Length: 638
Image (cartoon, rainbow, N blue to C red; front, side, top):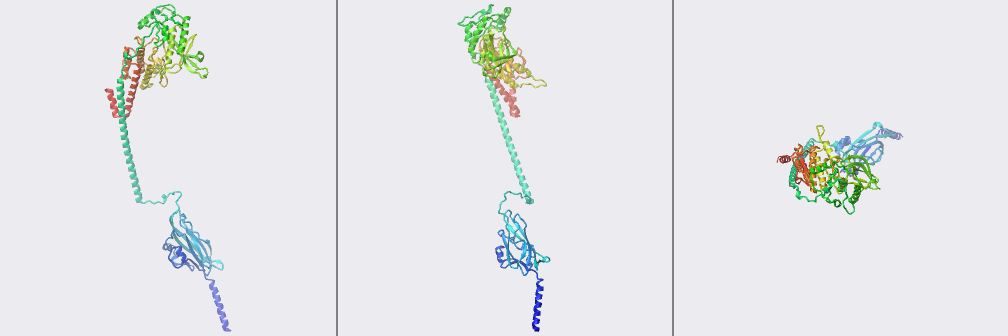
């Protein structure tokens, strides 16, 4: 009996001791990598479980987290997942797990396959942790694992028994994705001194080579420019020499080379001594009066063109060549005889003449109804010039400005003046030259004198232009020598087309100049003027008329050179601003012998060549070339 009581007491004491001991035992956490995972995940030849925490205590190798990092080589880039195992015995343990990546651009924070915190059971449990890289950046990444754990007693967490476990593992990431946009990495580049010195040396070498190449190119361009200037100077010199030879080779025209034309026909001498009224001329169907000697405007002289056959049939007289003294004497002897008024007989002859003129002016006849005459513009010797407006036809709603020339109805408007007045219009009809004033139309009316219509222009007379162009100390010269020479060339070209026109008193007053310096010769102005500019030779053919015009052109050339000064006879000295070659040509134009005077065709060619030569000389000077200066000085003193 006593023995049973003893064993019962021993058993009860043992149970009490066991209960007391169980209340003080802590949870035992075991954290490891299974043997098969060590070989497959970590690629380690290790035949045992790799414990990191055993019986609640980190193994001796992992007590220092940095030591384990240095011991374990970086995980391969091929390892993406690591499997871990743990269990807690005999008590349950509470945990809190965090895993972080040192470079989230290369690898994001690893994510365990279980909750960040919870209870660790008694049974073994396996979970995985992902180590996937982003592939955007290559480099070594450190993965930090922190595990906080403690035991759970009677359902309560013992915070005073909290323990921490830190683990650092390295992992290598490769770059597998190309960047969509390049990023600047200058901030991450560290230049060494050797690299900086090498870079500076390379840049200096490149700059030196660039400067050397630039200087070489500049030298080559300059040599090429000098060569081109030399070739241009040589070409200009050759052109100048060729122009001089061409000018010197132009032949002077002679009188014998001109085509001779029949002599002009004058009225019979018997009519000069007659004081009777105009008598009729025989003819098949019409009559014509012979001008009385008392007509002081013409002195009884009627000269017809050789081509005017109809007028030549009506006038059966021969116009003899007389000197100016004989004409003046004949006029002086008849000054006391009165000039007859317009008679009915004269009106009949005018009517017959207008019928003939109508056939010669087809396409130019204008009716009075189309014409509107306005204010008076100027008064010439035998006619007035009015400003008018013309409607080209009945359907034309626009009026064109014209200049209308009307003979003054006075004793000076005799039959000869009317004939020459209309003949001037007939001659203008065939003239189509930019330097000659054209004809617009003619009004022929049986009850009035003829009207001649020309373009209306506000051009100035050449004599006024030359006077206004004179320079002074305060005002520069208005026209340069090149422009003056061009004016002379235009006049010669216009007169070359008017060679056969005899009723032209060529002067600066009859040359109209526009604002753009276009010169037009008024071939119909001053038809009855007796001023022939000092020409006293007999004018018996077309060549003589051209020689007279050339003589008058010499006076125009003098006025152009001197800016409007009238020439005086005998010849004056050469003006200071007149080149010697131009002055020699002026002297040839004013030669007393008509056979020694040039033609307008020759003058036009010579002046054009002279202008080209002057332009070449002007082009040589600005080059500052030794060759051009030598050539110009040699030409001046040769």
